[in-house]
Structure formats: structure tokens, C-alpha cells
Length: 331
Image (cartoon, rainbow, N blue to C red; front, top):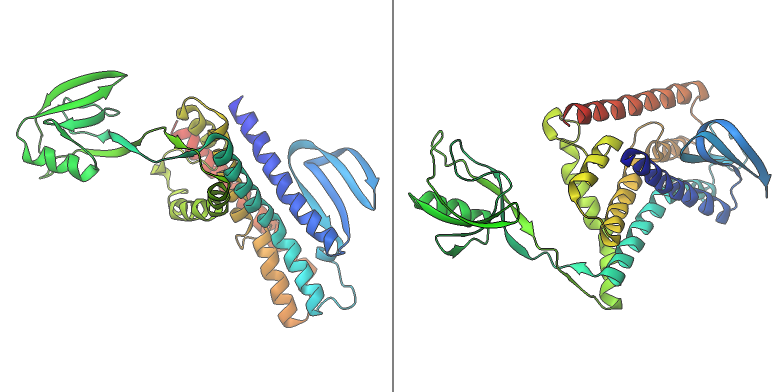
């Protein structure tokens, strides 16, 4: 059931993306011909104000069609600067809409529920050597009555002490355990990550607007940094497929409005950036095609363009199946 709701949520983000294309196309006097809710065979349709509104059999996602962006479009003045700019702005409008939505969600979250302080309450153990008293998931607060404030502090304290008394939380219980660091290949073998305290502060309107404006940038940087690990089999669950997203949600614990808005904001940025990739079938490739045709002042062969579009669609489909399969294997 979680997968269904996540797919439905992603579909809303995709429809918002397509709405961005449609609104800018209309504003620039381009001819919007179709707006589809869902894919596949048409279940119902209606023409209104020159646009064919349709409902597809597969109720996830959607698409729009603009006459000037058709592969067969060859209207007079196609390569005039204003016409080229109108098409390019329409192409990037979808991703711009996603980034705008991410900013709105981040602002709303900060204004209504507050912004996390990012305070660190301790360290959570993620790897321990064999025969150690520590367990993965333990939250360490002190070693030999000295507060541990960083992963470096943890490693240094363990390395110096032959026997260390550790104050930690395990399954909600405060415990004091003696541990003996065990060497393995010359290394102590301890690793940990920070545990963030769920504390928030209430920003004023100006601060909330700043948080919203900066959110898409910070989320984009985070996505770029992690993009290289997505296709690796050993990367664990990826939050880019329905399976990966469902598992990530189930591991998060209690959900509230702030967490929901945060997830929606991040996913909106991901949808926007993904569509800007220069892969046939995505907006990024269409943008590149428009630029190339404008420089050459000549349309590319329809047959060649269709071959490239089909190849891109097959590639994206296989990539999605591959990532989903990796997530299923890693569960």
C-alpha cells in the first residue's frame, strides 16, 4: 500500500511539472493541444478552449503536447530568436515549476512547524568489531565520563583506552558498559554516525522565506553528491524507485506534516533535475535538440529523432527496472 501512495504522490509532482509546461506555453502564445492525466489508452476526454483534456488508463503521471514542439512542426519563422526562446522557456518550465514547488513546501514547513536546529545529541554506532559489547544502533553519549561530540572523539577515546566505560542508549534504556577495543588489521573497527535531536525553532517571515529560497539549491547539491552511488548494487535501498521510497518511509518512524513536506520538497527537486538530464525522452534532450536545430537553422530528420526518442525511452525503462530489482534484492 505504501508503494501505491508513493506512486500517487510522485504522479502529483509529475502533473505539477506538466502544468508548468502548459502555463508557460499558454503565456507565450504557443498552441497547447493536449493535457493528459495518466498514460495509456484514453478512458475519457473532452475538448475545452482548444485543448484536449484526457484521462489515461494508467493513472500515474501525465504529459502535455505543444504544437510548436512537435517533431513535425515546421511553421514559418521557426528559427527567429523570439520563437526559439519561447520554445526553450516552455521546455524548462516544468523543472522550474518543480523547484518553485520545493521552495514553497520548504517555506510552508518552516513557517508552520519550524525549522530543525540540527543539534547533535550523540553518536549512533554503525559498525563494530567481533566480540564487542557494542551493538549496531547503540547511541553513545559518553566514554569514561567524557562527552562524545564527534566521530573523531569516539575513535580517539576508544584508541587510547584499554578498557573504556561507555554510557549509551539501547532500545530506549540508558546503559553503562565496559568495552575492550579489539584490533582488526591494525584498526579498532569502530564507526558511527551523528544522531540529530528532533528540535526546531520558529523562524520569522523573512527567515522562513530565506529557508524556502535556499532549499532547492541545498537539496540539489545533496542529490548530485549521492547520484554516483544510485546504480551500484551495494548502495542499499535507493530513494528513487517506489520500492526504495517505501522502505525509506517505513524506516523513518513517526510521520508528521513537517516530514511529509520535507520529503515532497526533496522529491519535487529530484523530478525537476531528472527531467533536465540530456537523455532522449526527457526535457534536457529536447532542449539540446532545439539548440542544435536553431544553430543549424534546419530541422533534424523525423525518422532519426523518433529512433533516438524510442532508444531513450527503452533506456529509462530498463534503468528503472534495474534499480527496482536491486532494491528488491537488498530488502
